[in-house]
Length: 394
Image (cartoon, rainbow, N blue to C red):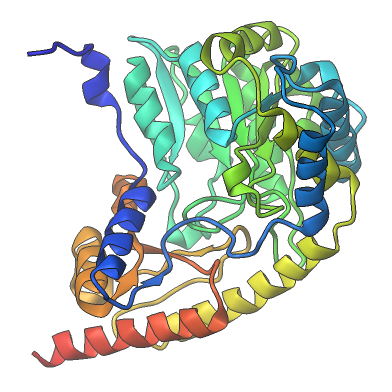
């Protein structure tokens, strides 16, 4: 028998892909399945971005690129971040182009995680946080995100969890899976409180930074020069530009860490696909009309989804202000999260994700992705309602 490294037993997964596989298997059997599970825009990548990728291939961009990314792309990222956040502090030398957002998470956590270390992470939160922390050997310290706080954190809750063993704090706003956001005053308080903990790094996952509603404004941790020497900021193209399959992400690293991060790139993936980087450049520097249209559609779907979910027996749903997820409370149905996820897929033909797939504090909730058409969302919620009424009557 092969003997694997012990760390492999600590490595988790992302349930959205498992649910997607089960949903596709049921479709292959002829079942009608409505997918509200995967966190992926249902729009095509805007045409000018696709054309830029095709042109790059035709122009002969077939070889390796610099490990940290093509200079023009890193410059475009720096320019875009400085413009969007009203700063002038992001330099292209501190930008790293990577194949998707998970790479930044993995690099940051593996840099700081080891036996004896602690890493604070949001719970419910993106499952790869907890999985990679455990894989590193560090102790995951959950930061509960509660419905009564709009699924945002309070600065005092973060600061109270810091111990002498804390190496890294992970924050995510707007958040997956809840759509919750953290207001500027709480971020101000957190940054102020971190003055007492100069040896603690921060990884801010801002992949949904351009997906906000109802006039909400994103506050990037890049706006705080007092933590610039220990901040890792994660963002990318997947969500905003409907480029999930292009595998394009970027991160901003402090001067003290960028060399180590680049070395990890060299060891892990060498460099990012050349034509995809030129497509990413076109996304950042080209027209944003299609992005604006997507956000109008997402906003309409958000309002519809929340309103319809709140009509269902045993379910309540607060309004999310970011990303493209609703996180309804299902405690009134009598179901545990995983049991309801399985039953809805098997019996109602609706793919959703159990809140517990995002951590223990997700019990009593489901993640519903409204990255689907109004018609499909309506059909899915109708099926959920019929299922719950039948179970109630049984």
